Length: 87
Image (cartoon, rainbow, N blue to C red; front, side):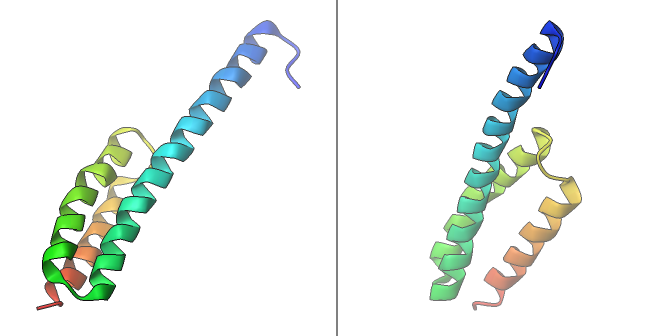
């Protein structure tokens, strides 16, 4: 446990940040899962709509420092390829 006042404040701040980051990551995962579910159903229009909604959420994860840009790019690229294959 923290012994100094500044360390206690840092602990409180870190805990709030951890909670917020967890919520943001969970939100991104939810959007990605919606895309994957739409791909499994095989309806290309629904998959494209879900992908279009998921892209900005994933990009927001980059700007907030939650995910690395290459990780997001790779995931979005793979989802995009799977959607294209639905034709």
